[in-house]
Length: 146
Image 1 (cartoon, rainbow, N blue to C red):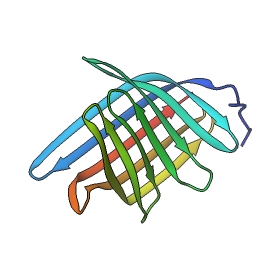
Image 2 (tube, rainbow, N blue to C red):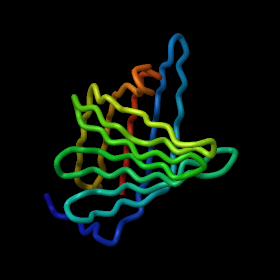
Image 3 (cartoon, rainbow, N blue to C red):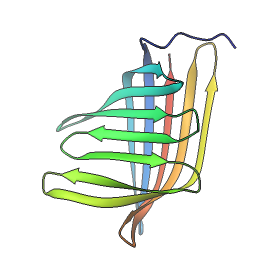
Image 4 (cartoon, rainbow, N blue to C red):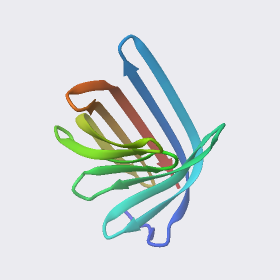
């Protein structure tokens, strides 16, 4: 596989789908955005903005060479969630009303890359907890193509 120089970043097409199941209700969010893929210190950073009617939220997904994925959203609410299959991570969820401690428990995670054109996919299934209370089941699919 030919190494693509991503140290300065390359424009990429981003497709993000999130499915949230809480009790009997299911929500689906889909974003198709232009973004950027940057490689720094063997990690890939996928940067884009989720566009809502109320504005945009900058998002960064970091794929670490060890397989840990970090998802950061910085808007009116700020989160930095980490994922690794079979692991539980605690994080802070910052809102204008205050900060809350939440936890992710990653049930399944798959990361893959292809060449020509360089593209990748990240699939994560996780549970979200507030203290001992489970807030919901989440499925996240991120696809990017340069």
